[in-house]
Image (cartoon, rainbow, N blue to C red; front, side):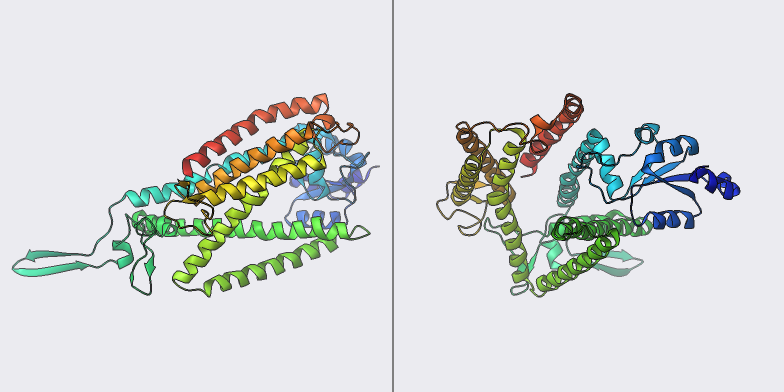
Amino acid sequence: MTAAQQARESMPSVASAHDKILIVDFGSQVTQLIARRVREEGVYSEIVPFQKAEAAFAEMKPKAVILSGGPESVHEKGSPRAPQAIFDSGVPVLGICYGQMAMAAQGADSARKVTLIAAAARLAIPFLLVLPGAIAISLPTPQSKTIVRNENGAIYHEITVVPKAVSEGKGLVPAIMDPATSKARIDGAGHEVLDYAMATPNLITHFATTGLLGLAIAALLASLMSGVASGIIAVGSVFAQDLYEPLRRNRPSDGNLLTTGRWASAVGLLLSVGAAFAIAAFSGKDSQIFVSAGIIALLLVFSLLQAPQLATFVLGAFTRRISGNSAFAGLLAGLVVAVVHYGLTLPAGAHAGYQGGWLADLHRYPGILAQSGYTVVFSFAANLGVAWVVSLGASTRPEAELRRLTYSPSATKAARGQWQRSKLMAIIVILITVVLGLIFA
């Protein structure tokens, strides 16, 4: 008699009264804990080893399946796999640790499409950021006013006073005031500097009724907290699995990795809070200058350093001819082109200095994003061109040496067919990204 049958006979009423969940065990130390948590929610569950999962799934017909973790790696030959019948059945599947990696390994096309769908969803971010500001700035600018009316011989004065930052702004977007002069700050082109961070809150308070205002605030807080939570989880996961685990001689247990990830998340959260208080220590104009300089520095680092690295990675992933010399030559060329372009251009209204133009003022872009974007384009193109030319003199590496490192030798015919179905989606996402970048730059 199988373990599943024994469990079913010992708990006949529970099995018939509740939906059933099948837990496929790949050797995790917390599989029993997973089952206990499921049962605490009043849901019947059974644990079966992965070797017997297909038979148990066909016999049990569960409403959902959980793939537990395990000590193996999906990249090792002969590593455990989940029955394909589980994925073909259409029931919900939750992968935990190794179970998640097995899902990705067995459904490579689906795994690729997940990132593409997420990328397509992120294309809506420019609209979410720009649209509220565009609406707010197009509305009438509130001004202080006095209305005089006569009722039954009595004269009434209704005085509406708006803050100076609002009256000197544009639409519902207030101006940023200078505490030293109590006047709106002026940019290099002679226009008031607007606080677009207040566009969405002002739109909500201007148009939403009391009930909708509470709902909108709750939605904004939920969005903020979900972003913070995902960042905290990412810090713990990256530190535990990409930094801590490779440094250990013996593979740490799942509990050890979980504890390490929690401590890493806690330390990262404390560092973030400390950085926030450090920024808040600046006040007024110094705070704005500090934040603006930090944003410009991040854009500069990305356009000067990360774009050439991305070009080198693309060449290395899709060609077998790239060599160390060609990769270094491409990186160097991309860096030089990026520095020269940044030194010859400036954003509109900026002065020569850390925003560019230290070599000459040959061209003005509409803003810092446009300048950084074109720096990335020129740097990327220079890296690709130089690395490709230099690699023409190198010999092609054998496929066995580059297996699982480049696209062409490691892809079987079936994998190429699956990749082709995702390739069109990837191309569309990239083209839309480029178009949106040019529009909103």
